[in-house]
Length: 214
Image 1 (cartoon, rainbow, N blue to C red):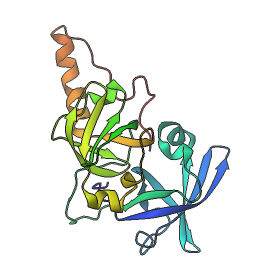
Image 2 (cartoon, rainbow, N blue to C red; image 1 turned 90 degrees about the vertical axis):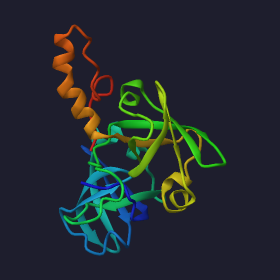
Image 3 (tube, rainbow, N blue to C red; image 1 turned 30 degrees about the vertical axis):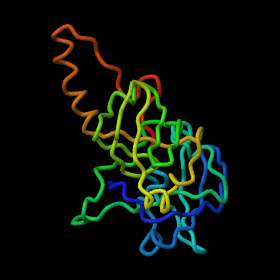
């Protein structure tokens, strides 16, 4: 589990395609301080398991499902990525509860000089976003400013733009999105009651996108 407070900008040093996915090597001196085999590290918001720590970098395996559902499919050596270690019991929850299970992707639709940034995403994900609610973009915990049928906007402060990949994103770039898990649980619990009242069953996050990525 994570908080969406990025610890550092790491650098992808190698991408090795494999039969069932790919292996990424990432340089990140902060998260590597106590990293060991089996630890969880969020890479651009995707929870991945450390395979090896060696030569000043750590490696992680990314399965085909994750490559298909997230922006990691397009990552290349030299790309900067947001890194966060799993939270420890007793840590301050500075952002919000983040699982590292990406629900899908969103494209940067507009960037304003005042930091206001709009993201375009499928309606089946936009339904879980509300003004002043939480959303995770590339592993960064953000507060929604406005939410539409297929878009949402956030206000990026200078610190966020400086210390995360969001300052590097341009219009059209793809980002990883994780909606608030509480919203999905509420929908799941409410659906049987809505159906009993004759309402339509709402589409779940996996519908039309094949499920969550990790």
